[in-house]
Image (cartoon, rainbow over all chains, first blue to last red; front, side, top):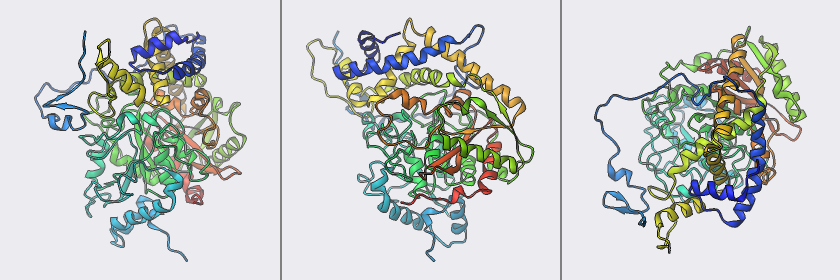
Length: 95
Length: 491
């Protein structure tokens, strides 16, 4: 299944990554090769095989619904590229 | 006779000297500083070292109390493990300047045990995406045994500092072999614990169902020591398992009589370097001399491990790296108000486009693709089912055998630049290590010989879930009956 430049552009839009023309060209070739390689999985019979998304038999781990200390706002904002009072400042989103 | 320098000792040997008050923790660090002064320019294993004013204890954290378990022994930490107040950047431009507001659980545990955390972190492939430490924004680390070659990756920095005696020991992380393969290439011991054995809280995530933090050390005893301290249940990590941590040092007895070893035939097919094959078979012969029995076994889905991994790991990575968008930390690309508006989206696109390196972008795009509408079933879901088959291969073998022994890597360390033009070639170098991550089983690499060019060869031991004790026992017995662990690079 070839990965066309259109597919790469579409996927990079989903991933919110701006690729330049050179990258689009290179990735198209490289990712096509990789996808051809991972296509070898199509040969295997997976009928009735359950998927393993998590290796250990642990499920639905939750903690008690009790109030406890959390990271103070000042610490959480320490690395903010832009801080506005107790918020992360970001550019406007204009509809 | 020249006295052996402190930096060249193992941690357990230094503990003895600290106990007898023959030396102080500062003496150890001074020795490391002197060594870094001699070799670091050639190796490039520590990052941002000039910014920090060199390797020193200035600003280092950890009490180093005399009565503590570790008595102030310093430890080097990979750049993807959060250390409060010290830069932790995953060797990526997009996390430039990031100072975590909290310590990873393993760091908390090490401090409580009296370790001193070196403030200068070790080099790695950006976000752990790589098998050579060539994908770092700080340039490649060089192999102490041959600076024209890679140290392996992604924990290449941690392995190189340990091998070059620029550190006593180090922590790395392993998602598809990133502790074991660099340990192999650098002639040191690297252990990937069972998935869930060590807390991932504070490890900047690559693939959440595969990642584990583990020790990189000069010998197996140090590995057992570190495992004792970092393993254990953590309520902050919902994937950590509440199983008691045994004393791994109690497994360090030099006896493997009756241990049954499986040798998977799929790991000795075409593609393995002839010298690596011979050296590993000699090591297997040695294990037999030491009392173990071995037999050929089959892990029939081995050939599918790499494609399965590059679907699952990249899919998980695409999700985990969505948080790097310029909003909360790190690099933010400046945007003008664009003609179409949507400045925020432009900020995301440009921050990620400029902030991530090539391999990071490649993997995120591949991961997004395999999860996208129309491809999810054919790729991601299918890979999860093949993962079940890979795990079942191990379950079957472990019904009869105590451990599995293989080469850690099909080749010794390759030259810098040799595989960078061909990502697929680079991915295939993980072929022996990846399955253990997919199955969640623990695995360890230790040195078992050298090629004619003087490059280290690694032996990999794989055990059942939560049976790191067998790993330590077999590895320690082999190590103590050979001399490989005493050999150092001629730097």
